[in-house]
Image (tube, rainbow, N blue to C red; front, side, top):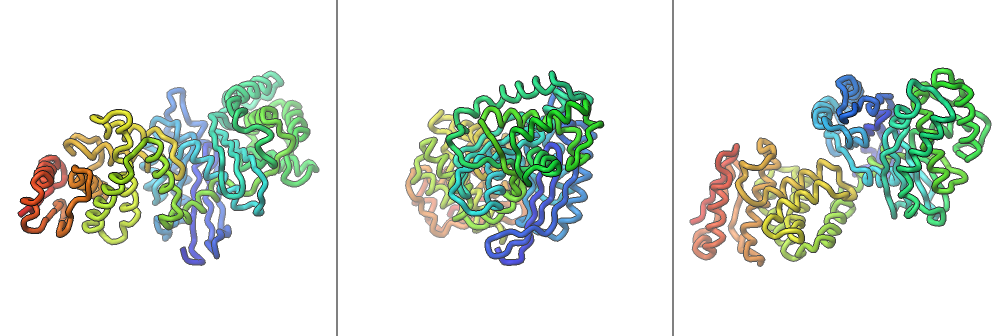
Length: 492
């Protein structure tokens, strides 16, 4: 990453969409521009967890405006991250497909723990270096993230389905504020957050920080009322709730520091924040400057090099957890990437890295079942929380793991994607070549992609020397029949 490079992060939150543009300078990212639009997509989820047409359109319109600003940025300079609303939405693929198109960059839906990790990274990067033990609380529109960490390392992360938009809709219908509504909202929030007590004990941290939406809004109001800048206290929360009760409804609130866009969700946000204060015995909380979008920017830097890419460490952890035979997994990965690099166009290093991860994890399901390990491996990857990975990335790895065996045409995957088809072929070829669980002889073995045809050529005499491997490669030609691709193996 060169000094002066511009980077951008798009945060698709349940209440607001945000665009942060920064300039990389000597290991740090300095803000260049910040845009925020109140989209309230979380309000558009119906009882069946489908996003309404109106909510999707609001999101697409915002992303189109962001996309115009990002014109000229390369794909490696932009990270778009979606959170709880799109985690929940059953029709999220429809929104993401068009949203990625109008934005001009792929949108990653991240899991709750991964969102928490990115939040902590954003908060920690904008705080002075210190050995203090930190509790970070981020109350969003439909989820609340809690993180314990020190310096740049998160030690515990958790995500809970409780937030300002969801709680305002549920407990403060039509914006009405009553003592009964606040009591019910706070009790319900505590019921959801109660399991956090075992991990986020008061003796486990020194300083509490509030990140983003609700914490920032409350901090602004309390500061405007004469309180210390950027500090939230129990007394301040009591005072604020009393002011809301006196106003009786959201549209009658008159508070300095309260932005109009926050008015409709302030009741739910305060209820959740009060529940967090009470459960975790917080006396005061500092408002943090960093948030998820800054974490996503710094994550772009980490992904630049394999040595700093957290996803590589996560893959090794999954291999250990599920008892993968490391020597064989590394063998398959090496052969798969060797073939891929021969046939892939220039600039495919990231795709090669992802193929390497899929190959290392291709036997992750063996601990569950040897005969159907590919299916179990795909299921694990679709349902695991893996630090550094977005949910679509894990799904794509799972598709490769699932597709390592059987007829390719029976897979429910997009085989018109040439990059994915090549990754899949190389993984299948590597599994076949390594069938004896020892290093295969690949000298002279060459793979090429010409149009919709894969050409695999071996040196003269190779098939006679390795008859079982040659048989498996001929079987592989049959496996690709009735697909958009043809495999031709020349095995003299």
